[in-house]
Length: 89
Image 1 (tube, rainbow, N blue to C red):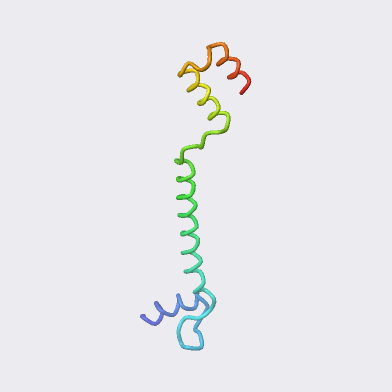
Image 2 (cartoon, rainbow, N blue to C red; image 1 turned 30 degrees about the horizontal axis):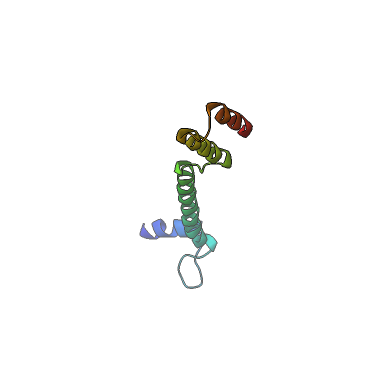
């Protein structure tokens, strides 16, 4: 009975090799499956990092912040602030 239990899976995997053990090219699927799951995990980590990283401010955002600071310090009047803000859009 033990011979049948061991022989059937070995025949399904390509028979017996020259060294008396399981042969055939089926051994490659273990490392390939490992590489596949490593790639899946790396992709998931990359997507999570990409989604949670804060967005960098654009040049327009920085210009608006500078205008707001200048307006807050009193360097610009309300009219000048609005005009310059409209020009940025």
